[in-house]
Image (cartoon, rainbow, N blue to C red; front, side, top):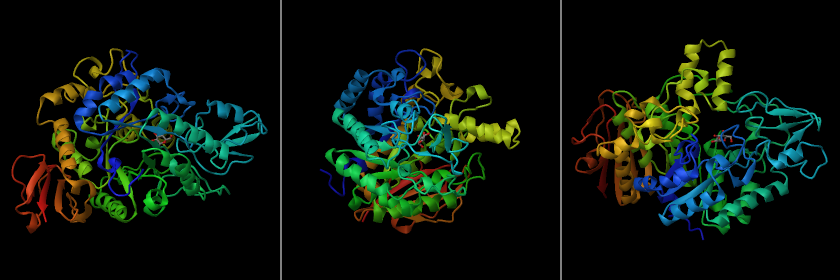
Length: 549
Ligand code: GLC
């Protein structure tokens, strides 16, 4: 039974594992489930509670597992169903929950459902995907038109992402039933919930209006938050979710606060939380394809986090991340991965662990892993990056300018192998990995950081313990201080019993911040410098003060 208020998924901390790059146990250069099993002790040692796995299902891997060809089979490169059962049992035995990625807006074009659907207009699955006689002007997220022609039907099918990811037709009750069946299959095995990929796309505007690209970068707002979206989620809740003690988190891409709260308002009984990553778009608009790297604007970054933090207090819960498999390394983006690598890595950790909402740590973030120095096409594996390269070349970008953008934006930055040791292939595999190892593995790796009590890794462990020991860090309200300050991100949290002050210098130079009088005698519970917090902050300094009320 679900109780409103305190829950395990609000108090828990999520560790995200992108299985292809976590740990390779069978020596083929690709991470696998047995590799994860061998590293469960490490995950547990961080103090996290929940592991979210990116897709582990059978897939031709056009979009690295986000194109599923069998929802009830494990990708052979990752292992077998027995491996999964063992992983789940061992994780549970250690008190770790396991959350899977449900990719249900679309399947692979190699899924038997689609293979049947595309054969004719009158086969039993003809209506399982979205077919039209004429395309409209919607663009696909990974480039080109969102419609692909199939001669056998003399029709086009919709694909919001790549053409190998046809959108399922959620209007069709049989499709919904099939997806609910998939959820029950994993639920009955004992998984602890799902991350719902591209959930805001389930329902589309059925009039399929032509649409101009909007400012979020989605060229097709009518393909989001359609008229039946909440009908489906409520149905899913009634038929499946309520029967399990799950954590459900939606990927709320392209959403505004107004359209998001309806997904997570507990009274509506849809999803537990969403993550939207509004802060990751600051200074990095992606209009269709290509990027405008307009620089980082701290006041804008703070304002957007503040907006969602305050919204949560009235409407529901959220997850927060600084990194994931679709982003770049946070220390390279918002910190300084050169001389202040360690300080800024810890500063960002302090932000993540003291926001209101469930924190999501992406594998390697706890080591301060950095972006990769991409410089030629043979190093790139991600289809989004390949498309961006094509578009930028078409727009006449000189190669060095293009690589500068790719190095700062490519999703492949976060998909390089986990850096375990300073040995061969960073201890990830005995074979040459499927994607290059970041050359900084010699200095940045788990083994080295394990030995150094001052490492980013140990700082994460400390912060995780501190967060858990302070109810206020989880549930306290959020109040932004000094919104216009261009160097310092400072805020308080307050749960009525305790008040926390979090102060973060986002720059590599000294900054001033006047500690409010009531915190002058407060206890310092975390920080990345050892001296007493003062009004003069060191480069990338972070500290947290706590006072009882
Ligand atoms: C989500 C995933 C991303 C994937 C896309 C299409 O945004 O996070 O990796 O490419 O959905 O499934």
